[in-house]
Image (cartoon, rainbow, N blue to C red; front, top):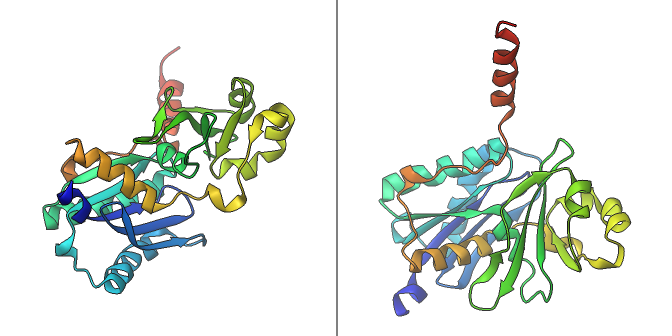
Length: 242
């Protein structure tokens, strides 16, 4: 346990328009930077990492573990974050842990007495979602598989009281109120942004259980096909002989 407490971690999230980078030592937060501005992650991610390392007086070589949110989320954002961590892992020869955006956002509601519904805007009138139950020792534990669904369909399938968290809550708040009414527990607005410090905590637990990977093994989790894949599928289907 002593080694875990000293573990120096860099955690990165670029799965949405907002972004977050954190440095942690064990379970303790050393520095964190959250941005909710409309600029691409490619323009700011390395600058954020350099800034935090400088403020913490750490060098890249001091890091023991790298963590990255691998989705679901923005296809472009995920690729940027994963490519950055892959590059660092290769240069530094450090282990990497991939973290689900859905599990990471569920970390925003610790000790929730009811199931936590991760509710992330997937665009195209859909949401990425997954149900979790909070466990004091392990944090959010999945109660089912991740999905991407129209919000109305998802909400109508939720039983009993549920706490909703994620950027999709503000987008579909009126629909939530209409369908779930008093069964919906909704936290304050500042609770809906994914934080890299929570990514770090989940990664530390996974690493302590031997679940880290090398950078080359880290892949994005998209759940649904990309626009390019959809367009290719449509093109191929129209070109097939009748």
